[in-house]
Image (cartoon, rainbow, N blue to C red):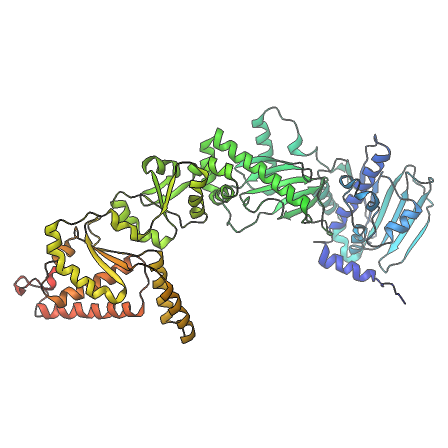
Length: 619
């Protein structure tokens, strides 16, 4: 035997008030929406019908809760429609025509009127249908789920609907003149129908003079000025610029405002969106592409599907197409700036570089237009890619911050300009360059590439530094590090530690192995065994006075100690973490230097008569 679900109206109202709608004030929005849909439905029958919405607040002199009368001159309801649409949860008077005329109506779910039960215990609906027999009917619904329908004793002169709400005592704050004025203006300020509010102070019109971005202006500058003023009033922000938005997908139009400061790149802007000129949400997040976090927008959509709460858009193919189309509007704006006003584009890049870079990665045409305007940090300072390429035919970059720090000073001294591509998107942008732009050579650069640019020694210099080189090779062999002596600048740098990417990975794996258990250590041993990295290299700089004096040291113990300390110093200067063996080397080397210094001069602090080349070669 089949049974019907039993629905508790109290439970549904609790669900609406606590989980579906953002606040009790949405009852004004739902009534405005129903009135708007009723007027649009009547316009289908009578194309010349204009339509008006009226709110009248009737406050009692005895202090009892006020009554709100909500009136529209829309299509009205027949008796059959009253039973179907006012007393059936989930039914909508628009559903039958929805697929054929989706753009005509806002409501789709048949639950909007229930939002009124969040602020009152009883609803009285008086209605006369433009399609019926001319009778005026009353529907009285109560929050306990009961209702009654009967002919009205006060017939309406014209088709339309009146809704009477008596405020529940604990909800009277939602029925004040100022609150109603704010709510009706907030939700219905862009409606194409007049919205009037009558209080004991008189009658006033609440809707604005139309959609600001559709108005005619005397000039483009006047339009920009007016829209920026509208954005300032709407969002309380002085924006940098405004961008027109238009999408045939979803029938969306509006304006995007360029933020005056760059938000966090993971943030998503909350946009103000209208559905058929009724405010849908002030915090819609899914309207623009993810890269467009540098703008905040206000738009109206006529053909996008709202969620059940009508406070955001349903994620479907239509929304995806509209999002892509609005993204194209933003692309067009940036591309026009690149062609017509490069300085304005540079200012925008300085504010919102991450958005511009993300878009460039996503759009090849925009990439080719914008890439040479983008600034990059280099070993010779900040410069655009265009400036870089004018002076350096090969684009060289490092993809890590530590890698850049290791080579920046030395590379600059050798006349090498290396880009620091450790910032978000920079490596991907540079890797894309030879695929998007013809005749461009792009090369990753590491510290292992630096010694290739250093000056080689003469034959005499090689002979003089041979003892130092032989000692260095013996000392550094346990650390998988070779040694070489060259001449490079700046002269104050005595040594440079260099390793390729595989070598850097091997160092990290060795450090992890020292700190791991036996099982993980075995895994790391297998990884390191499969690694084909070249040995790292410690390059001594013969331009450095310490290295030149060290090459003349005859004391083998002092030479060994000095090489060890220069090796550790090179690791630290290159921002390479020390492993356990290197930490021991550092500690022992410091103690050895102290001991050698004290022993070499008899504790006299290095007086001139102490004799021998010994440790004095390090001072």
